[in-house]
Structures are given as structure tokens and as C-alpha cells.
Image 1 (cartoon, rainbow, N blue to C red):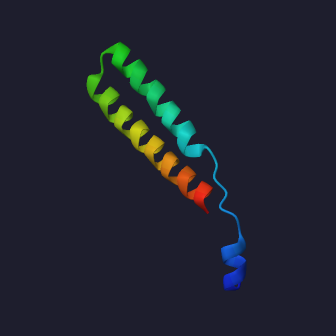
Image 2: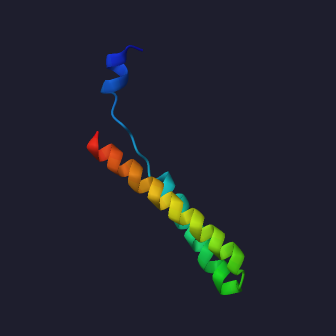
Length: 64
């Protein structure tokens, strides 16, 4: 691959980070209802980071 081929390829973004964020958010809600506060806190933190990563990649994708 030449340099022109690499730079001309569009950045394709899928919603996988957002899907995983929703999965971890649901796990956090269920854990909070059950009373597992430690698990709920950790999964909520993971969900938050997945949303942040998704937003950064979405912004980079829109700008490029």
C-alpha cells in the first residue's frame, strides 16, 4: 500500500463501543438493584469510559 492509498481510505466507525457501554450500564443497574455496589461502581466506570471512547472516535471520524 502506498501512502496515498492509506490516507484516502475513510475512517469507518462502528457503534461497538456504544453497544458495550449500554451492556455495562445495564449490568450496573442490575447490580445496584441486587445490592452489589462494588460491581455496580466498576461496571458503571467501564460504561463511562466506553462512552468517552465512542465520543472521541465519533469526533475524529467526523473531522476526518
